[in-house]
Image (cartoon, rainbow, N blue to C red; front, side, top):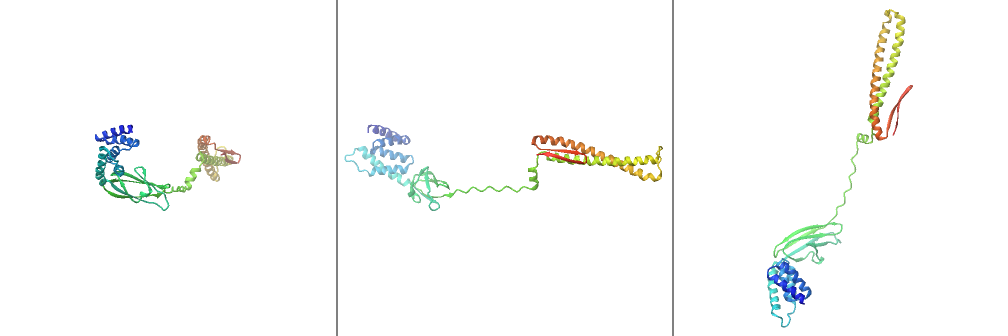
Length: 302
């Protein structure tokens, strides 16, 4: 009691000085130690002063419902009279809030007002509420919580409705877009395949050119031998050999072109071979030309 008396005295002094925010803590601790009308009355008045109208008026009503002790001292009687005056001023200021919740049947919804759980019995009914701004939340397992903010003026009555909806299902991943034949070919193409293909084409053309040049050269050699025997040492050919001379010139031109194509093909093929070789060294794949008597081809490892 002595400790309660000291705490209560300090709290009352702070309240008289208009410092209710600090007085509340001391008055509340004094009440926890020992209840007295003087500390309870000032505590309720300070709670009303800081905006806790519902808590303060409830405390003062409990105080007034207590039977007055016989021979109560004057400070006790003054505390009861002050409680009645504070209630008369505070009651008209208390606001009323109605909270409605829309949820599927059987779903257990929890409603919180300023972070504190609201009893189920108060959902859908008028609830005395302190004026000011309040955060209201409705939530349920497996459902999307909804939060609303409402501001109440002194004595105002209002309502707010909240709805809980199922958590949306995660959409299925869209199937990949179909690849074009060209894209698939590019995706599966082996490193070095373009140089290798070009090398084979170049070497093939070179081989054809070489064969053409050799064949045409052989024809020219045969025709030249015949003309040499017919035209003599002075290289004067009879008129009936003019067609053979023209044919020999034509085959000579074909032979020259064949050897030119062969040279170009072999040079291009060699260049592409070295390009493909660098690519195959990194990929582990290779394609090599194979030339032999009577055939031309390639061999590779993948």
